[in-house]
Length: 83
Image 1 (cartoon, rainbow, N blue to C red):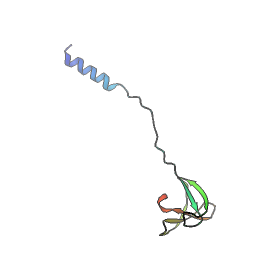
Image 2: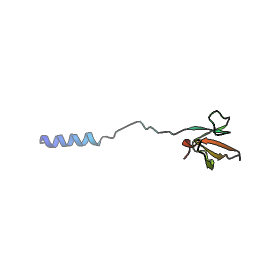
Image 3: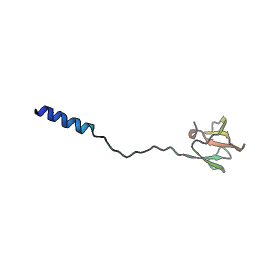
């Protein structure tokens, strides 16, 4: 068998070998505080996780957005934490 054929067969065997790798996942878990007022030192009414639905009310110039929680209460959340 010529050297070129042997080399080609070896390359095909090496390249066709399945690669086994550990599966990893990217997580995006964020907890956000819902505040009573639009101030950092305001009382925290509740802490919610990413994916929690909130009803948008109004975006404020203070950097906070007023929202309505599922229980009907109003709160403020940092605007940069919502989408």
